[in-house]
Length: 480
Image 1 (cartoon, rainbow, N blue to C red):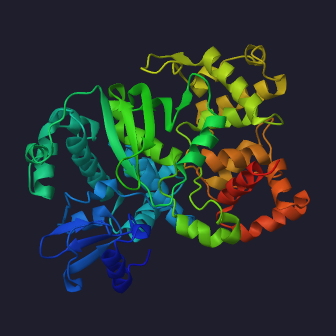
Image 2: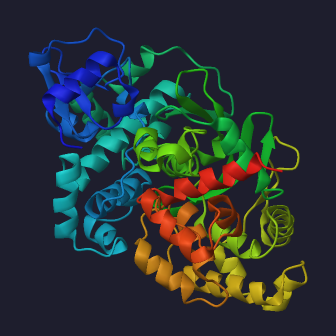
Image 3: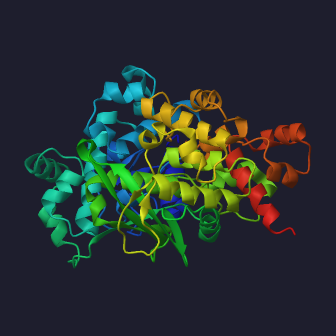
């Protein structure tokens, strides 16, 4: 956003949650920076400086507020091309990609030059990608010191620092206190065998609708709903590319406007990736006010609907293929058989949550008959194997940083994947807010037009057509 001082200060005085995470305010007299929603005494306007990112504030010598905790601010969802590129790079950085790679490799992942990436990133966040990454590591360490019982050494390693000495020196220089001094300001914690984090969002958030959406599509053994809690297994890459498996449990936080994430201790070495995947899965970077403005009357009945993302693009793509021309319930049943047949068994504290979804590489070596015998039509089995080979070879990426148009084209070039499947995958695995799976029977029914007219009608909801799809699906639930 363009940082207009008057608008920003008005948001700070009102503690306006719509601007949480969109900018940060630094106070010249205290050299502390805060979120717009901070409950501390509002500083005088002439003492305020406004920054597009936490990293920009820290580079100018401000340290994070211990009350509002800038590391808890929700992310920034964008659809403009350059903004999306910068946000994609930021997502990869938050996912820990710069721990094991350099900027040139990150730029290649995004299919741009490192010079262009630096320019776009600087314009969006006010700092270089490397400076942004350093701040993200420090803020993650601050969160782990505050919210977990991990040792300082484990915190340093989990945050991506190569040595404890480097971590201590940088923490002291940037925050004017040592990690041990920060920990002494927080309540002591009993070891629990799990990690706990609060992830903020901008209200409203329709948690019941999100649970209903995920619950209808929950893959047996991999996901489950228990009351108002969502649970799933995860397999993620941690520092140094080391794989970690475990589970997460998610429910509304007792704190205002946040989801509380419990994660197994086995995922401690991959915390950046776990949190990044959770943010994507639950669409925590959404700006409901922007979506509502674009959807108009369509969005009025359910203003808090969010776009369910993914923690594993391959899993979502397989699920989409299995869902072709069958009911949601039938696809869910088949997906459960697929996960149990080819996934990896793990132990969790939750009965029935006992498998991790298979890797693309494990499916790429199969024959269509291996999959078909579990109730999958032969054509779809071939499509799944072709998809797995494309992902395993690196020819196809399915994550929010992947280029949308190129990925859609690559998906539709695979056997058995048409526009509907490709856009559904983009909607969830790529977190693309303008995806429009067409022709979707339910969408066409809800709009009340023929397919071509329904597609034309969708133009009014750009660039948030994926959210329009959610509202159209939701509208049919009320009808017999």
